[in-house]
Length: 94
Image 1: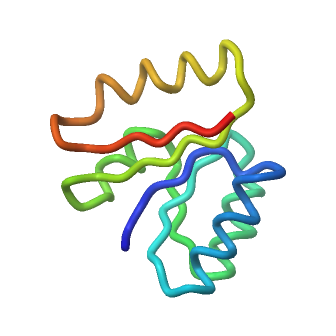
Image 2 (image 1 turned 180 degrees about the vertical axis):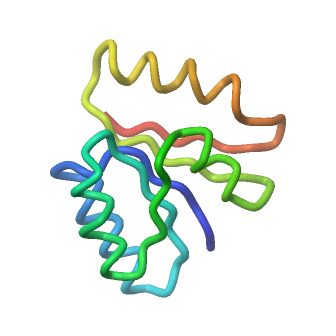
Image 3 (image 1 turned 45 degrees about the horizontal axis):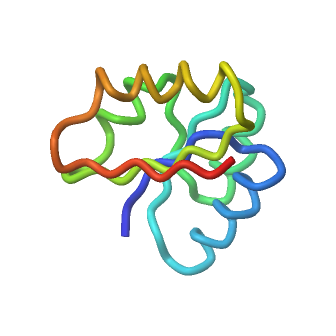
């Protein structure tokens, strides 16, 4: 399975590691590029922007959002609405 994961904090980074250990292809994005770099060393594929993340995923896309509740999450979801297409899937965990 291929998916994009946004938010590499307390939940996102461990989930990415587990997905990678189980053979999944994970594109990662976080505003802190050090977090994406760390996971890229473990074979995650890093995206520099949300648009880059979405463009790198095969359709239909799966995007997992693991950000804290609030304005940042709402803004990210609104940005994704402009980038995704019908049939793409967004999972949000807060």
